[in-house]
Image 1 (cartoon, helix red, strand yellow):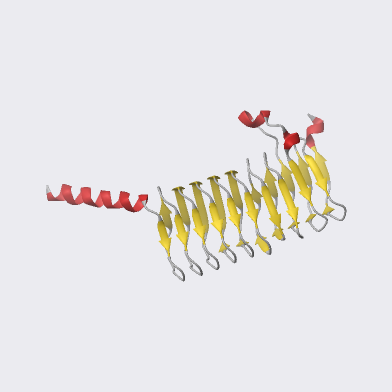
Image 2 (image 1 turned 90 degrees about the vertical axis):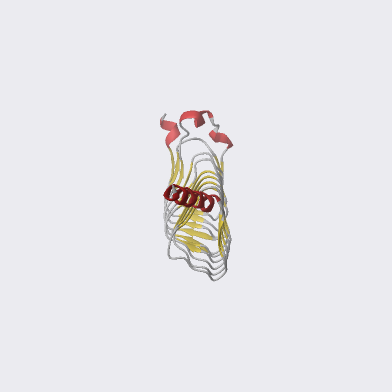
Length: 220
């Protein structure tokens, strides 16, 4: 009987921890992963942590902090200035970053925008399905890809790979691609190819540096 009572108490404690928000204070550190089910994760200034994951909650990383993989399902990811991470991904939420963000690999969303501040460097690609991408003075090592999102490149943004607008499939196939807009200002550049798998409003300012533009929908 005592064993049953102790086991029940232990299980309850695990569920309570999983249901609470996780907070790492300023200048803190955690060698293990930070996992939350029914709460968000907050990482204080200049802290150093491992992987961060949440199911139903946002993730907030304050200025100067470092982390490895940052993932959530239902929640946004907020990254302050001078944050360093390996990657970030959310399904239902946006990724909003301040200046001087450093990302080793990809930033990805399904239903949410990606907004990145000045002097940021992304070592992989930026990928959304249903979300806008806005970049100001950002360097992207690989590609920028979306299905149903506007793209805005300003203030010397540099995409070293391709810019890709994918074709809508399934339920989203009725989406009117003509409503999408790609804007590249005169200071920004796409070194690779602009791949358009459906019609979009393409607004490229005089002075912008771009590679080849391929329009695949003309072949359909």
